[in-house]
Amino acid sequence: MPDKADLVIRSATIVDGGGGPAMRGDLAVAEGRIQAIGALGDVTGEREIDGTGQVLCPGFIDVHTHDDRELLSAPAMTPKVSQGVTTVVAGNCGVSLAPLVTDERPVPPLDLLGVEWFRFAEFGRYLEAVDAARPVTNAVFLVGHQTLRYGAMGRDLDCAASAGETAAMAAQVEAAMRAGAIGLSTGLFYPPAQAAPTEEIVALAKVAGAAGGLYATHLRDEGDALEESVAEALTIGREGALPVVFSHHKATGRKNFGKVRRSLAQIDAAAAGQKVALDVYPYAAGSTVLLPQRIDMAEKVMITWSEAMPDAGGRYLHDLAAEHGLSDQEMAVRLQPAGAIYFMMNEADVQTVLRHPMAMIGSDGIPTDPRPHPRLWGTFPRVLGHYVRELNLMPLEEAVRRMTGLPAETFGLRDRGRLVPGAWADLVLFDPATVIDRASFDNPIQTSAGIGMVAVNGEVVWADGAATDARPGRALRRAA
Image (tube, rainbow, N blue to C red; front, side):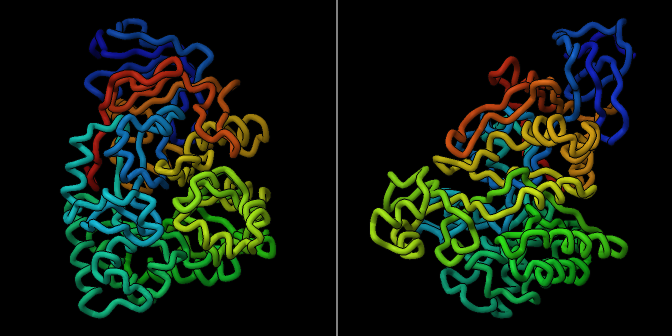
């Protein structure tokens, strides 16, 4: 074993990402990869970090993000790296920045990625742009069905795609997979995709599946028709011959509280015959564009942004409606285009999904939102601090597995997600006694506590509560 390394972390509590017990030891990094783990007293590092009292684990993999634009416009990726995230999965909910070129404002929710950023006719060109931007974190990408639909059909989306339009979308999926996409995503919940029949998705899923990809889905309905929507996704997975990832699994609306026990049982039963996975965010509120037809499912709705009424950000829809003498629905229309946080879930359900052994962790944050959901900044420390340390919902080693080894395996991230010699040195050093989220609904842009050091591809990118100048991330292509 070489006696010199680029980085050595000493005397840390090592949690390897595989779910096994923690061990005390050292870890050495050379040329971007883990060189050795154990008692490394004979190895000297160009930089050495004392990990006494700290947990050292693989960098967290945020499996559900909307960071497609952020990787280009704000490549420092501060909301993510500050909480220990070293790799993000983008292109979720059917919304990807490519392949699409348009000068007009795209239909919601595509506009969550901005108005002027849809400028990549080819998926591969977008990946090249991410590499050129030199983001701090790594990223992998899904190609989004809503983006494909808009590109093939324009604004006439209230019908099934024609055979020619479906063929055009399928060709784009094939090209995206060749360029390195990891699969297809849908957001059948949203108006641009609601008219798409199951057969339209199956046609695209078959292309992604033939190339070794997966299918990630924001279900058609997460409320009254949750179980029917789970069944539809499972059908798409079987007919497309590809794994299914259930995005931000939940049940919305008070009358559906508790229904996740049945939907999880459906997923468990399906796992005997097909590959399935799921992710969850650790909050009982969601966030997306403001949809007037959906506000009744929430106990309350907080406006995060409104182009028609910029001062509405941070205020509750019902209060605004009362001030203007309008119904909540009328006020929601008046605010368009806008975004919102929907308090629509049950905390007991959130914990039920978090406990499920398949559950990975995804933030689902919207970085372009001026008043984002606190999950953008606090998801991973919240799991570690609140749900692991305070509520003892699962062992620390298991929580780390859900954030590292499990998503790396699910999304095919080679040599990542585990602390083993030869793996890429994506690392997080955190204090298990103090790690916690500080972002709140009232004050959402706050870094978390307890994250001491973050390294991406062997380079330290966060230390002592601040970013370094290193920007070693890149677009990870499928099977690369």
